[in-house]
Length: 195
Image (cartoon, rainbow, N blue to C red):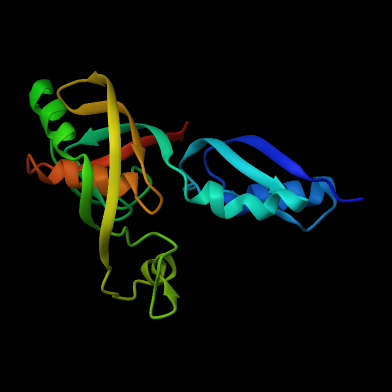
């Protein structure tokens, strides 16, 4: 007997969305299990799983807006655009919290941003993440990414904690990277939670 419905999972850090799907498939004993949007292995929070007939609504859910709680650290750049990557540049910074907040608010709307090279986007039939892991040089594409609104929770001289909503296909890592380019010190995601 197949189960049908929606299962909400609080994804822990360190596993992929596909890892969670595989685990649920084994637990419920059926293959027809999918998810309504991939979360990075570093990300935590809400992962929507669809079982049985509910997989038919995946396109609807995939195309809906997403909300994230993010903490961004300034003065660091990594190859993954988050704290899990290889550090490319690091420097101590003391930024004006009002400047950080103002720069963040400028990055709403549709932005033309580079897709993170550690992502599942395919270029020439090859996933960027696979090319990056093998150190194969691939021209990473840019694409429009839409960021709807933000709520700032805390700003210090070197971090920003906020909620950020975006449309499908937008990368919070790319947004954080761009935010770090504006004051010229670099930035990377320290944490990410799907809300």
